[in-house]
Amino acid sequence: MASFFERMKDRLSKTTDSFKEKISHTLYFRKLDEDYFDELEESLILSDMGMETSVKIVEELKERIRQRGTTATEEARDLLKSIMADMVTVEKKEMTMPVIIMVVGVNGVGKTTTIAKLAQKYMNEGKTVMVAAADTFRAAAVEQLTVWSERVGVDIVKSHTGADPASVIFDAIASARAKGVDILICDTAGRLHNKVNLMNELSKLTRVIDREGEGFDKHNLLVVDATTGQNALIQGRTFNDAVHLDGIVMTKMDGTARGGIVIPLISELGVPVEYIGIGETAEDLIPFEAADFIDMLYDEGNDEADDQ
Ligand SMILES: Nc1nc2c(ncn2[C@@H]2O[C@H](COP(=O)(O)OP(=O)(O)OP(=O)(O)O)[C@@H](O)[C@H]2O)c(=O)[nH]1
Ligand SMILES: [Mg+2]
Image (cartoon, rainbow, N blue to C red):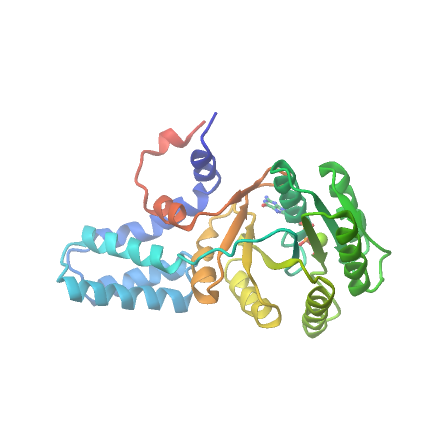
């Protein structure tokens, strides 16, 4: 059976292959001159690193090259790798039990699926889990979470479509407290009539959780979809303004070449990516290790070994 690292490598191969391809020609430069830096910056932007982060990476590279008197492109490549590794090194916030996890993100990114995956993972670790269906906006959202909760085997607190999400959270916290569950995971709407409404609702839910959830640790997770590239970054900024984000889950990393977006997401928001989604089943969630990810981007190991 493929090792954990191999499985991740396999699922992320579109992203890593794309990065290697985009960056490879910069290795053929003879001199580390302005042409080299321009080319590199463009390659980074094309690899979904975002304008701001790409400029920052190249500025830092110039500085390190200057300090060290580096002239070889291979050496510059190693410096580049260490700069990127530094940028994604953000400490993850440990959760203490009992905890309320609020899951936020725009519609369709994979919130409900991620909740099922997280519930499965925590149950496998021997934790007691409950989910709250606080996306009462979209018809079928409650049913979708109900189906998942039955499949995974966790308790669910829910109401009808159109109910006040704050009251669902209120009831869920009371129930989680009464049953002594370790982890309460709250699903939220990804879409309301407009963005201001959505952000106001999330702030309200945060206040309810703070007020009613005494004795519970609080953990806010943003779910973003890797296939949307730069949009993930815009969403990250918007949600981070409305809700304090403790962590990010990047979904749909399987089958996209745009996974490089995790780098600017982490470095610009200063929020760690905790997990990545690599498929549609409850098992397709893996912890994200930023340093391993950077290693994969630069790994030149033979590709044939990656095939089954
Ligand atoms: N390939 C792949 N598909 C995923 C992943 N995560 C979620 N999906 C799919 O993305 C679609 C949307 O997922 P949902 O969990 O319903 O997304 P949501 O954010 O809850 O959506 P709304 O409730 O409409 O806001 C579903 O078809 C999922 O199966 C993933 O990691 N990889
Ligand atoms: Mg949903």
